[in-house]
Length: 261
Image (cartoon, rainbow, N blue to C red; front, side):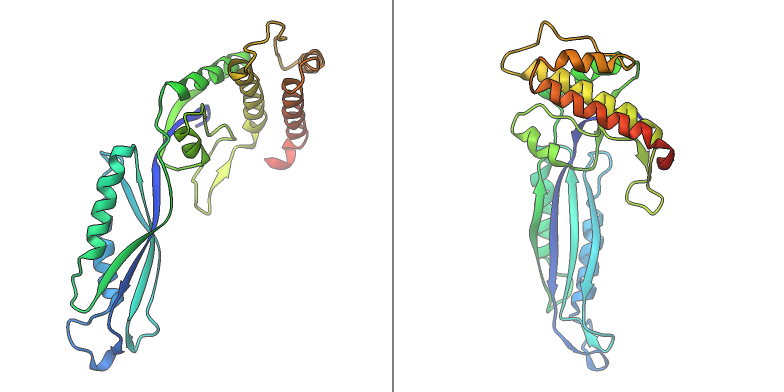
């Protein structure tokens, strides 16, 4: 745990699965019942079967709603779902499979459909992203720490930025574990280090990608001498302001770390 820099992420489609059935009194229903809830249960089982850990395709049913009461065969049911995929080539096959499951009914008298709620393209690791990662590696050496590139199944705004061909990285915040659970936590002791890493990486990236290229007069940065470094950098507008605020953020985190443990 710790030292991970996200250089790739899965793409994501969030969609609603809607099933319509035939309402009637539960005590006088024909069999099999044209229940939207029973039909959506069949579809959910089929959707879950699309999970393929070897390929990296995942599908999850996150929320289900339907029916009006125990004495009535459900007229409708919905499920909020998502699928994730490693690259663009995987997107079309998984969506076609989802659409087929939605359209085919197990129970007579029921129908189904899917509608995309939101989506993000995958953040595919390429030379543009790795070029920016190299600047983070340089920054890590300056503060005597280690980093490593990782791929994550979660999505972020970096997915969209990467599609535009812009160098982007993710996961520069504090380390932690047990995400999306009651026991989720982060490690307070790593916050200062991660803030410093982000600050120096930002300066490195500014030098690499700015129109004027690297500054020949850049001061070397070290933690004990950061005040002197900031003072010398104030002759360089933009870069100085950025580093100054990042370092002050680090200082405040260090001062309040006893409350963060």
